[in-house]
Length: 175
Image 1 (tube, rainbow, N blue to C red):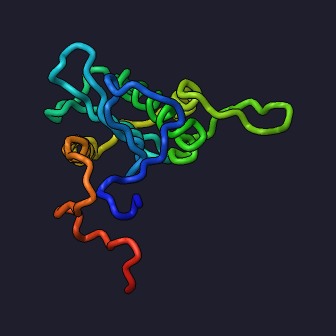
Image 2 (cartoon, rainbow, N blue to C red):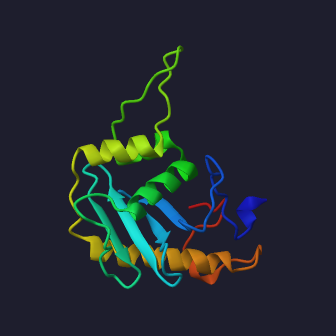
């Protein structure tokens, strides 16, 4: 039945999370990226990202101004983004995606413990990542995705096709 509706089946969160501080988080385009609310101004949000592999980071406002908290390392917005990503996807998946090596303890059965957000942030900070050179471009892309995401959330549930998604093949189509 879900193949015939305009609703998308979503992988459930690893744990429930509140959307007020970090309303949008995704693992996409080789980065952990998302939108983080400002703690001081209700009309301001920050677009933060961390690249997989080298952990190059960026954090800019929705008006594409640099975050004042970036002083050679992760700001509070990036740290909050990592924390919410661990809640959304689980620590192991985020660590794999970002290619972060954490010093995890193993239990008695030899199974590695799932890294926490603090362990991931510490492991990434230990390599002294640089600020991303393409922070401005990333900000625009991520914020645009976030706004598009919000627009789809406002649509009523329906089984009718969405015109802007007409290029998706229909379920069971034969080539």
